Length: 217
Image 1 (cartoon, one colour):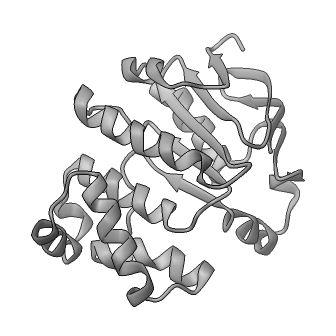
Image 2 (cartoon, rainbow, N blue to C red):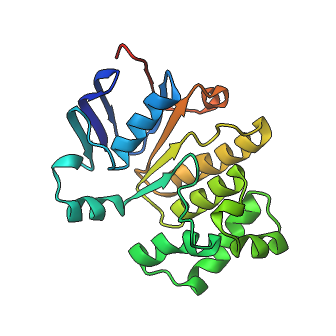
Image 3 (cartoon, rainbow, N blue to C red):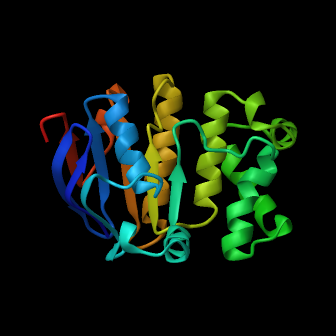
């Protein structure tokens, strides 16, 4: 469960919302800045000015840092710009969370990662070359695909997609959406949360719950 209780973030005032287990939710904001503020609080990097954010029934910012880190092991995040570690190759970025949190080895993950890349339309030879690159050598689409595969590999209970479709053409955005839509029910009770700002494609998301935020909320 995700619960916002009277959360104040800059121009967003007293925002309350509850996302139950199993739901697909779309939250739209009036600007990129508003969306970034909201994302930062969900990612545990910026405390709200007022109110509570609860994940799995726990007040996120009341937890000790160690407990907060343990909680985030249950969450998959796909940041807008990929969130990849700059000095690690793509393969190392993808494997790191699954190895650290789940103990998956490179041998265990390799076949699954190749299959995922095939779903995104990448051929085997291209994937081999891509795995050895650093993040600054990737397009925004390649960064988001790597971040998405990294998150999916952990089979997270909550998936948070930050501006997943922003800046992509319609066909590419549709491919990403189909994959996230198919992934959602593979784990019973999974929450899929799409954070969007002024993104026309996001209107196509089949959400159980849609929340539109603007500066007057």
